[in-house]
Image (tube, helix red, strand yellow):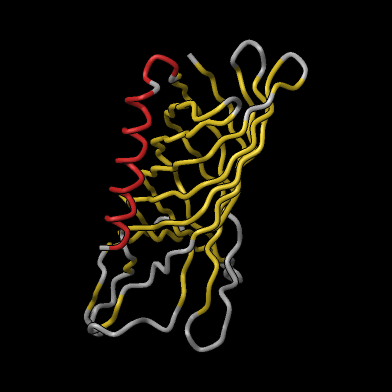
Length: 215
């Protein structure tokens, strides 16, 4: 419920700002590579020993001016995440997750040389649209629920993720841009079990590189 209220508030704010600055708002596309992992512990004091997994992101965004050199940048991304676990003498176990994400960043764009520096931060909300646990030729679909029965043996995570973004990059005078970004998940993806809060913690984290273009 809190996540829905946050997303509604962020979306309402963006549309209100966009209505005031409609003639100056610009739009862009962006695509890049993700280097993702899952951090946390199993609830018994043992940290996860997952390794980083490569994924991708692609999407669109808008830049709504607030003041000289400052913008609100809402976006919509399709992003793949997850992690992998090395297993001795057999195939790695891969956790593959796919999300639709709504990042809303505060962006600072001062002129630097012939282009502009890009510095930003802000929250994101992600909705899982698919997931699998894969080992070799075997794969199992991940279910997305907020509460499961203790008898459930299927891999299950919460559908909604949220956290924070950081970005830094450079936009050329041609409107082509290059960007580094980091993402820190703040939502525990572990569902409740029989209505009880989970002791285990599972959170998305990662960084990436992307290329964009503004129209």
